[in-house]
Image (cartoon, rainbow, N blue to C red; front, side):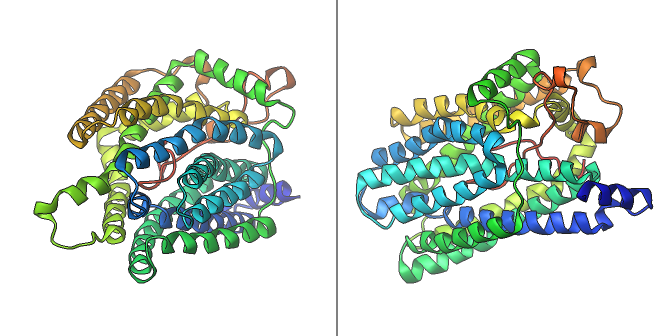
Length: 416
């Protein structure tokens, strides 16, 4: 019924962005996404400080963080792959539930409970990074809307994520000053409860490949990686950038706390500092479009990624989680040795340089002829393949990056 309405609107000359179907989809997705981003942002400012307030050593805090990242790549990968079969909306609800468990654990000063909460956080983080947009892309495709309307929704979500990040930093600061470091996490619990109710009442369920087992998803994702080296390179770029970002997220607080010579305010206003980070994140989003046109990096990176995964949406969650394997390996090497902060930040700088080199290599790579589509809509929203090609050519998907603590890093597609 919904596809028929969309087709009728396009046939009558009305753009999809003017249709009721588009407006309803955009409203439902953005409200759900903003609630999820708010809960995530509230957890970002005092991640290290709350453990430090419980008098935990830096090495113990780092291991708690590492436990969360390991759960992201193990349990998170498994559950995300099952979301293709059992439903993306269900996975988004589970993300809110696991995040709630993580926030609750921070109210109890027991180390093993912190580890349990870290595991829950890692699972929720994996689901948050993969299944919200997976739900959007699939529901958009089911509605028969145009590729331009999908980019419009994603572009709006990028802007809103930055605004939410700025706002949650100030909320975290003021609530922590009044009620302690655990206050932002308790507020996040309320946000996640609202999110769960909203998803249950406003989102419809959609799926990837319901017939495929989790083992099949893992196998086919590996086959996709073997068939196109560009996807592997994009995964390496993602991993190198993410390891830099996540190590920075862990270590920026202790680094600033040790810079006593330069400290003019104690305790450090971590919430406001996080808001400043997000202001520059938003500025980066704004300048990205004109810079990408100037240097043509937008086409070189984004189109390569989109064309590479133009047959992969049914295995999206599994494929994107594979990209996190090298990230966890690198983080394990850095954290388990408990290196000095100067060495850690030098390592982050080297990873950034390697990311840039990989981007240059990706830019020079040509798209194989078998992946070239005649138009952008065919790339973004391909037709369902024939039965004998379903396993070899699943549909496309897109993922983004948003924020210091969230969202596993991916390729920005804002209004290419």
